[in-house]
Structure formats: structure tokens, C-alpha cells
Length: 112
Image 1: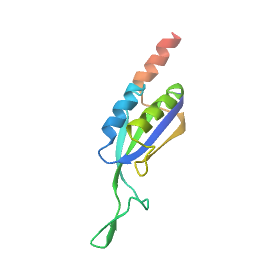
Image 2 (image 1 turned 60 degrees about the vertical axis):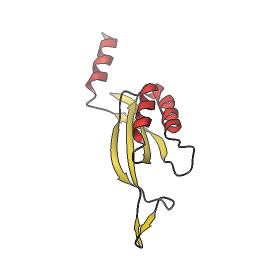
Image 3 (image 1 turned 45 degrees about the vertical axis):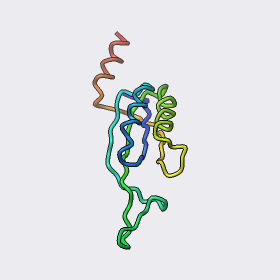
Image 4 (image 1 turned 180 degrees about the vertical axis):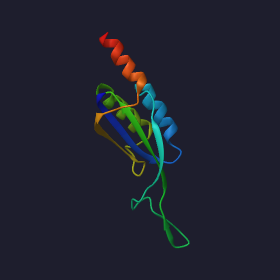
């Protein structure tokens, strides 16, 4: 399968549930959450003089190109990404995809 977009959002830990719900309402069929640590200057904290980084979650959402703008807008709104230090979201082009059988079957049904 070709021609998908990957929406990547890096958010404070614990805020991704609402973001995925909003993405689903905008047309996304699901997503994946990965744990991460931020190293940005504003997020750095000190504990007994030792720098620690804030915990983050990375949300990966694969969508058809025509849905990307609406899903990204929903992610930005739900994650309050227009506010400082709330996170970041961006879209990457995906050349090929395998393993999403429910979508592959839908495309085959459309041709036949």
C-alpha cells in the first residue's frame, strides 16, 4: 500500500488519551503510543542537583492523505499544542505500508 501520512505528536505523559480520541473523531482509525523522555531546555528539571528530563509520550497515527489535515488539527486542539511547552506535532510522508490488513481488504473490495 502506498501514499499514507504519519502524524507524530510528542506530548506530556498522560495526555495522549484525549488526543487519540480527538484523532479518531477526525477520521483516524487508531494509533500507537510510545514512552519517551524530553530533553528540551524548558522541560529539564533538577532533583538534588541532578538534571532529569520530563517523561513524554509519542503518538503515531497513520492516515490516508486526505484525512491528514483534519486529524492533525484535532491533535493540535486536543493536545493544546498552540500553548508553550505542551508538545509538538508534525506529519511525515510514508512511501509504503504493510500489515494493515483491514485497509488492504477495503482497497481490494473497491476495485472488484
